[in-house]
Image (tube, rainbow, N blue to C red; front, side, top):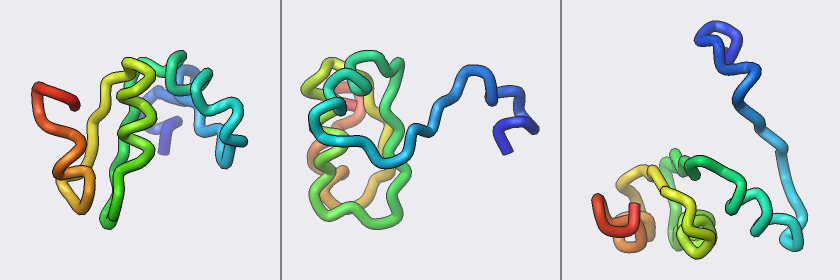
Length: 73
């Protein structure tokens, strides 16, 4: 799919990462996108925001309360 839209050279999907390296990824990211269908807590979004990384997220579960449009996400 990334090849179809020309994003394969600028997009990385690293897979599961150890918690010790997550802050480095959040800080280096241009944006954190959380496209969950179900998200009870929204921990990924909170961790990204703690690293000053902009967040775009689905309006579901805990994300509705942690990612406030134009305020925290």
